[in-house]
Image 1 (cartoon, helix red, strand yellow):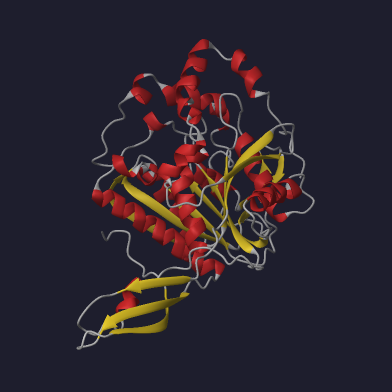
Image 2 (cartoon, one colour):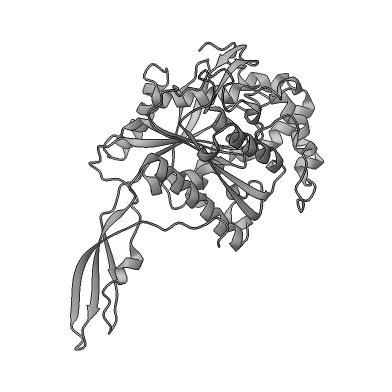
Length: 436
């Protein structure tokens, strides 16, 4: 489909066309992006670490992507028990998830495409590393986090177009980025002395946090007579897609008609404070990406889009979309999420939406460093990520059980060392988000 939007100004050139009040605010919120990627060895120390490269867009610019590839699996695990009692069965407590893939692995790997938050004016793929690395190693999937364009140097719908270009790079051999994406991964595999991997073009999922959730949901929508594109704007995934399309929505922005300071706030959520409010960061910068007259457009506010097309055509929410919505208690986006939940149910897609409400936490808590949050919040964060993993397992139809070869060592009553090898197959159990 041909859009009237194809490319934006070069960011370096656009920097000097902005009023000073916009430029210094943008420079301020961009400071975290100067942090080098090696810090991910500390923020996501369990790994794997991402491959970072660029792929071509439909326009002139390149799209940076962070790509996580499953590590190689270690096959044999020894658990040593010294006890006068029979230690048989103790290995059951030590069964491990299937972390990594075999070096001779030849099956295609499913792909999760992820989008960071930041109101379309800030944020980066670095903050996604703990989540992306966890999904990669626990699901043995490839995870791609997209460094999409931001305001004020790009304008709506730049982020949507970058997102679609990355999706097409995964699924469409005719895409300009199809081959460069695979070459970028291949070169890193060769550097590591590993066998190349293959992406499963038909097993794909999306995840998004805050404004990234806006993008993720957009990818599963087809809009008839879209006012932004001035034509029909369909999902990059064909209507006859063969598999479920899991969509993980973490506290998404679904209705952009109100700026953050204008939204109703749930009871117990204090008014905004800090430098973002004091220096009017969102109030001044957000309109540079999304002007007020376009806030009600369905691609800007996907919560306003039709779920089912009124005329029965192939528009609305993709028939294979399966959604998990995670909502923190203290979030000014909650009201619009509740409105959308009811809309989904009223339009006959309630069975395709699971809602997890998390008490006692604020917007964005899953992306805060562990050192910034309480023990309870860390447990709720891990539970939210565990629920996301299970959701992907279910809809990708993955068997994540691992046969673990375990050597159990004990001593009999005479002190003689005894050894036995057993094979245990287990998977991590589930837990409600509200349980710590």
